[in-house]
Picture (spheres, rainbow, N blue to C red):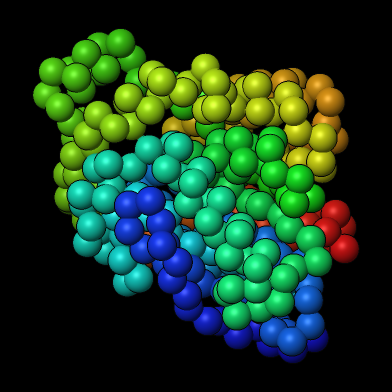
Amino acid sequence: MSTPTLTKHTVPGVLGPILLDVRSGGRATPRPAVLVLHGFKGFKDWGMFPVLAERIARAGMTAVSFNLSGSGVDDGGDFSFPDQFGHATFSGDLRDLDTVVVALSEGGLGVPTPTSLGIVGHSRGGGAAVLHTAYDARVRALVTWSAVGSVARWSPEEIAQWRADGSLPIANARTGQVLPLYTDALDDIEENGAGSLNIAAAAAQITIPWLIVHGAEDETVPAHEADALAKANRRGDSQLLRIEGTGHTFGAAHPFQGSTPELERAIDATVAWMGRHLA
């Protein structure tokens, strides 16, 4: 199999450009494609995501990883667009994801229209992947890593302070930046949390093969949220992979310091799942 090559692309998003990396071992022949979707404060080049994308591509699929327009992150991995981050919403993430799926499906990312489509989403990106998959019949396989089971992540006290101040300070431990998250996200959750952003309801609608991967010691999204997603998926073909002894990123950090046995298990299971169900 040919060695994957990387090309970079840009498509317009809700809050600005969506920056995409496309890895593929063959750009003349249609093949399955997998979207890799980051989470809150994440980006396509964070930690383990390039490793995951490369492994997907080496398995004979096209891997498409991208920065949501509300990530606030440039192509070098810096938070250069804090205003975009500040106005990001779950609904905006879903619109960006729609845009990427359309661009890929129409052959607009330098590769032919894929023969089948899968999504891998981490954390908040996992929740978005569930919401998208519930209504998009083009998606034939789903893997979520450390996925949120609800968009409601803040206490009543935090919400009251958020409203009073007009923004919520979000610290980036790596850079020391404190980025304001404006009330757009809160408005979106209050307006759509019980409807188009209801992750549990979306999980109940998914019937395609779905692998739910979660670290048993996840300090950010408790493992019981994975249990709840699996339980909600009564109509579907879901499998829960709980990885003991690891947390939210399976031991990965940014900058990437190397893999861990737990991360390798998550990657191996993901690549095998996509290879089996997208073939």
